[in-house]
Image (cartoon, rainbow, N blue to C red; front, side, top):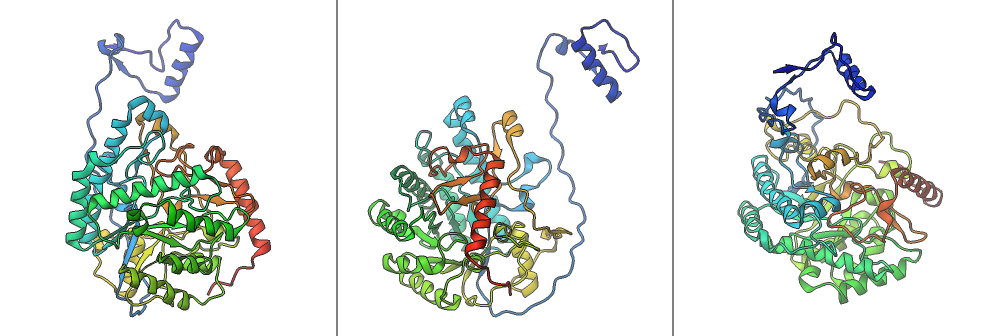
Length: 473
């Protein structure tokens, strides 16, 4: 073996080599160079690290409360315990995706295998949920990367057996699985191309659910989208898209949800009643963008649609982060929810849209004594939860090395800005590429983070001036 020049060694070298040597001096380390390195051969791969033992967590007590609620609580897309397993190779999650550059390099078959692995991990998530008395979950829209892309899209026939296995397990255990296609899925857009992309995206989600053999309770929830400066016209386009462009099996699973910026529950309810499309009531969104109708009345009318369709009613719950003041800050979801809504019906499936995912569900279990909780499954909350949100971190460096991006944002977490003035929809995606959600106007995903932040701030200020917010509580 030959030893490279160490901190005390001298060598004749070029300036570039001297710079490299200086770096080694600063580190104070030497490295053994063998024949394989000298000949330019690939060095041996490292042995996989053994799993790290779980640390001992101190779980604080919770304030006990009472409720008559008997329904199910669920969480969206990601299980924090399984996702954060060490080493990283042991992590379990269903959102492996990639960039278009990776598809060009590795081919679509490589991408489809990411989807297969996502589905296999979904089985493990369902098993963990069963062990922890959670029987309601939203599946990731990134399950099959780019499956609805106009150029790189593909059917799910190749993964039929794995999808059937997921459905068999969920049906046997009585678990409800739903989806929430991304904010780019715009049925009310004035652009035909955007609507075509939205229909293709919904068709992909429906195919995934149908191949699992799930019942009618497995719905697909979308928002109304942008108003494009004319809300009645946009609502008319949504109606036309639903009645004239959606295949019947897709329409059978479609559900609309009120949002915090454009469409209140009061805006959507007449359309839902006319088309017999269920309405998912989101408490947080209604607090930011309230209706003139009381929540209890909206829920009564919405549940009537669910009953006519023979679908189990569902709602969404989240809370703003502590100290949130502006509209944009109020939109961001807190790590956990501290109480159930006052108007919550006793028999309801409630999706908890919180950053701590399954921990947020277990937290409410403990507060209200809803279900038995396994202590080993608990993790402590953050000591200091701030109103600031970090947004989506850049995953470019990791993606360059592996080609794989772990898209851990649930659909509700995707940072999206809807401009109700000119009808544009912009978002910060994964390095400019989005998997299943390709319905945005061309070029809108190519905005820089600074541009996207500036646009969100502008709209937030505009919103604050025009719509006074209710006082919390």
